[in-house]
Length: 347
Figure 1 (tube, rainbow, N blue to C red):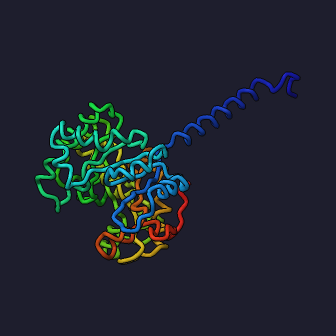
Figure 2 (cartoon, one colour):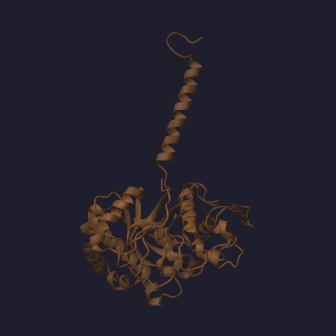
Figure 3 (cartoon, one colour):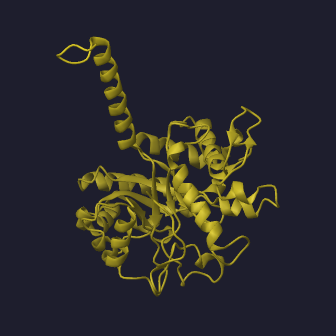
C-alpha cells in the first residue's frame, strides 16, 4: 500500500524514468531535420499573384521554398512569411556577376541585402553546371564565383546565408550498387566539395527517380520508382533498399565518401513526377510518388539511417513557357485556376 504522502520510492523512480523518456521523445520529434519543400519556378504566363502563392505555401505548412532567381516582386512577397528561401543565380548570369569579390558585392547589395525580412538562407550559384552540356568556361568559373559570393556575403553582414550549387544526378557514375557511386569529374568536384565542407554548406543534387525508372527498360518496377515498395540488395554490403530515392541518395553519399567528405549532407534540390507528356505520367503516379517522398523524409537511407531527408518537390506549378511536352507538367497546381492537380499531405 502506498504511504499517505504518495507513491513508494520505486514507483517514483519508474514515474521519473517514464517522464524522462517522454521528454526525450518529444525533443527528438521537435528537433527533426526532415522537411519537404517545393520549387517555385515562374516560367509561365499565367502564374498567380506572388502574394497568393506565398499564402498557399503557408496554408500547406511548407517551410522551405527553392527559387531559381531573385526577382524583386517574388522576394517581397515572401517578406515576413517565415518560409526559408533558397534563391539562385543562373548559369547565364553568375560568370560575370560573380567574377570578383567587388562584382559579387554589387550583386549581393542588389539582390540580397534589401530583402532581409524574406529569410534567405542559401544561394545556389548556377544549376547543374557540371553536366556535359555546359561549357568549360562556366564549369571552371563555378568555384571561384562561389568563393567570391561567400566573401561578398560576409562583407555585407550576411555570413549566415549558405553558398552552394545544385548538381544533376549525372555527376555520379557507377550508381548501382549504390556503394560503387563515384563522381565523373573528380578533378573539379574534389576542390568544390572540400570548399563546401570548409564553409559548412550542403551538397545539393537534383534527383529524379522518374527518369531512372523510365530508362531502366523494365528492370525497375513502377512501385520501386514511385518510392512505394521493393527490395533491392547492395551486393557489396547487404544493405536492402525499398525505394529508388534511397538507392540514388546513397550513391551520392558513396561518391562523397570517396572524396573524403562522407559527413556532408545531401539535399535533394529537385524531385518530382510529371502528370502528362511521357510514360507513366498521370496524376495518380505523381501523387503516390510525392506523398511517399514526404512520408520517407524522416527515415533516412540504409547508408545514412540517422540523417533525415531534405528535398524540394519540383514544382509548384505547370509552367507553359517551357518547351512543350514533359517539361510543362511537373506542377502540383494548375496556375490558371490555382486548383490542385492532386492532393498530398505535408503534415
